[in-house]
Image (cartoon, rainbow, N blue to C red; front, side, top):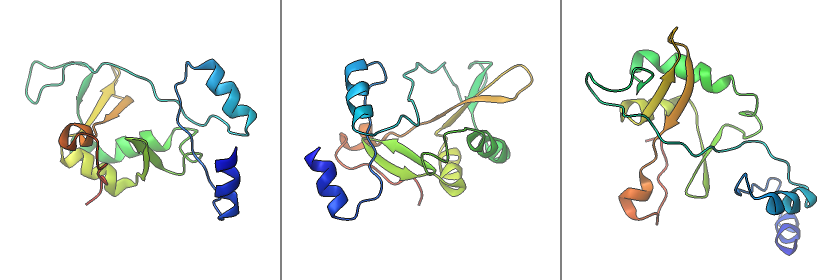
Length: 143
């Protein structure tokens, strides 16, 4: 609690906390401190996404022609405004605007999952900062 009081005394208006979603005791403690859950990260295993043929039928690398559809998909999340358009990487928060998303697509680091009518219902943005520098310096996604 001392840290929150110190932050408030320094004019900090927003504090974000990341914890395991299945840690019931931790969630109860932070909710008692006034924190409210706004998003949940789900661990998942991606399907094999190949550059050519032979990959998954449901998952594929997003291409530039799909950028607007992927952006609309992101905008459809009810808790996106609560996160103020931020994404988390290596315990740091970064803005995610359309230009940032375009960067992920151009770098072939945006994987979409579609249903039978080709509607997007899943998205993975690959952040390889951990593998690039051992997690020492998170990268800003936009150039």
